[in-house]
Amino acid sequence: MVCEGNNKSYLKSQNLKIIGPSTLSGEVKISGAKNSALVLLAASLLTDEKIILENVPLLTDIEKMGNILKNLGVKLQTQDHQLIIDSSNISIKELPYELVNGLRASFFCIGALLARFGQASIPLPGGCNIGKRPINEHINGLKALGAEFIIEKEIVKAKLAEKKSRLFGANIRLNCPSVGATETLIMAASLARGRTVIENAAREPEIQDLCQMLNKMGAKIYDAGKEKIIIDGVQKLHGCSHKVIPDRIEAGTFLIAAAATLSSITVSPVIPNHLEAVLNKLEESGSKIIKKGNSISIRGKSIKAVDVKTAPFPGFPTDLQAPFMALMTIAKGRSKISETIFENRMTHVELLNRMGSSIIVKNNIAQIDGVKKLKGMTLVGSDLRSSAALIIAALISNRTSRVFGLDHLDRGYESFEIKLAQLGVEIIREFNKEFISKSDKSKSHLKKNLSEFEAA
Image 1: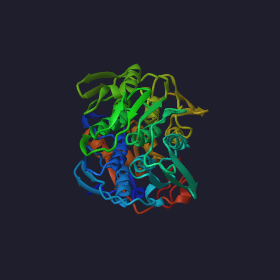
Image 2: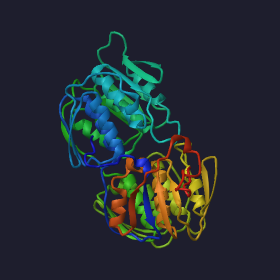
Image 3: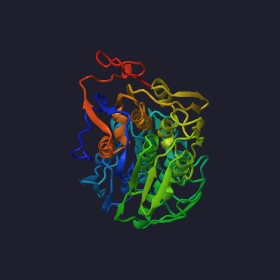
Image 4: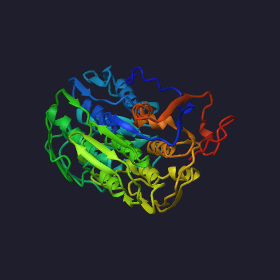
């Protein structure tokens, strides 16, 4: 287990009990970025020397990725939020489906394994059901670098082209600025022979964090954070120590929660320019934002309706679309939220409406007429960010709520309820004997005693 001492077993039988309405006050310590830590774990496969990662969040997704690495023979040592990774004795084999199922980031390993060992075999990945998220960009880019692929029985098998001992540099233009594909190709190109140029690359902070660590390891990567990234392949990469950047999505979630409850809080540590698009919308909607060093303070005053359209970084992040929609449910006026990244990321709308909001969705565009208040009830989140949105809605509701779906929530938020409690929220994690069976996911009730349960 990577997350030692973090007992998250039987998460489907757990819920958060939240007594609303709430007011938040104080400072929140922001954890390391999940989406950065996952790809950095995959990047550790590129060297046979030790990698020391600091500020690693204790999350179930990190635990899953750690188990994937251990299955390959990687040795992991954990202490609090530090992870020491030793990939010197890896056994190249097909990863078990049960390990990669439910973790989209598991596919990131393919670029590192191909670059270092010349072969990889990985089942098609899973993760939150928020859209198709095809792996075509990954595969086409790796083909350009000299890899050959066979996909059979949902297993992706890759190897170097015949008579080739290494991948080779290439000019690659992505059809869309896919974060995962950009990261996979950067890792693969770092050990390729010659220069690789990736155009229309994703610009997210997590990609910049990956490039910074790889350069510490001896890679030659230029212009990370720009639309064109240049990688000059090297013969070997070395070990290093690296600190994971703060989680901008966690920070944004707490800031939105403060705005929704008209509260004043400070989030730290953060990198403010990672949240520029979110801060602009929070200010536009009526909150006061104060940036000071590696902290951001917010004072919630009023909530005015504003329009939001998700976009790749530096635009408004899709991961904060659901939490921001919870804020807009009680805004003055009519707002519009357009989801342009994933086609199935508005499953929270039905539940927000059952809490009393007024939202109409058509073609992935939500029109929201603000209401005065929401009503608390028993609900379940259908993915990671929708679960966070439901918790924010519970904070502003007029009675007790119970939010299920913690198997989703604990994938991306470390000690979420503990941090909220420290801010003054009346919230506890409850443990129940009832389980949500797969056959009940589409029903609007729990068995027996949980009759109020609503499923997205």
